[in-house]
Length: 343
Image (cartoon, rainbow, N blue to C red; front, top):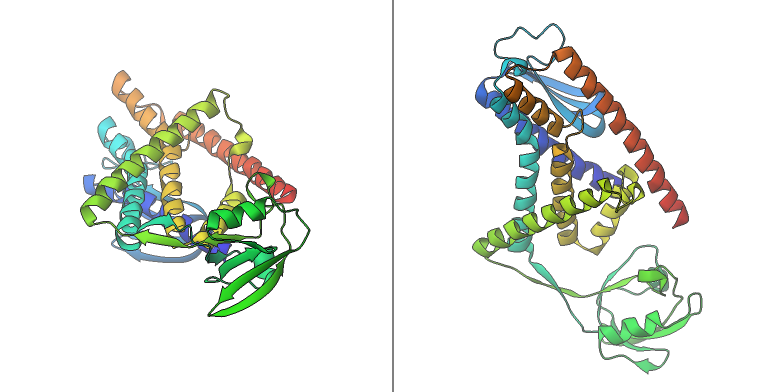
């Protein structure tokens, strides 16, 4: 299920990104040959108004194939390569910009229609995580904790303190109230809590405070801005050596994080999707060959020197950039697998 949800989220992020390029290109009159979601072998395709819309095998990217970008197509007066630097920048920037817009819309939807989560301190279980000790012991959402090893519990904070002070592997007797009945269950904590502390895999109840549309828009803008600044700061520390490339998450790591967010709740999954969308927008604006940021750099150089870089040279640089990105994906995926093995 986590894999399926991840594929859907990534597909939406890529679809919105490529839609930005597509709409910007069509708006200024650049002919578009193909709008593709994914890479590799075509699974489905249809043609409308001269544009082929394709779904391909590998859902880790997408592309908009425009006139003026391929060998032998350089002479099209309406092609991308014959456009002004400002038009090229507009088409390149439109993709990442749409990812920021999507993040903003997701935040607005989350705040207005689901609400801001506020943790309850009542000793009532809100969610039981799959394949964790609480689930194995039979604890259920809605169970009210009465005591742990005969120590009475009045708040959720008291309950978590008792669990955190227990010993992993040693059973605890937890008394609960379920639908008016008192039950005694035996739970064996593990050491998978925060900081390696004992935990049983339960979350407290969460109350959701819905905001008005106006408040949601303002808070959505603030959230989008703050996450953008935070991610830019992190990338800055990465390039200056203050952070490690091992901290990057690839496809496997994202699947794991999506699974965790989905278990916690829908609002957390939506907010995580917004975070990923901002992440995608920022990454594509980096001046790395094959990404939109490098196309903006090439267009800026064209504006300064008053003539474009030779298509063959630019294409070769983008090809090298693509190889670099594929290598980076392999490295971060390897790191993801190592993290899973180490737990």
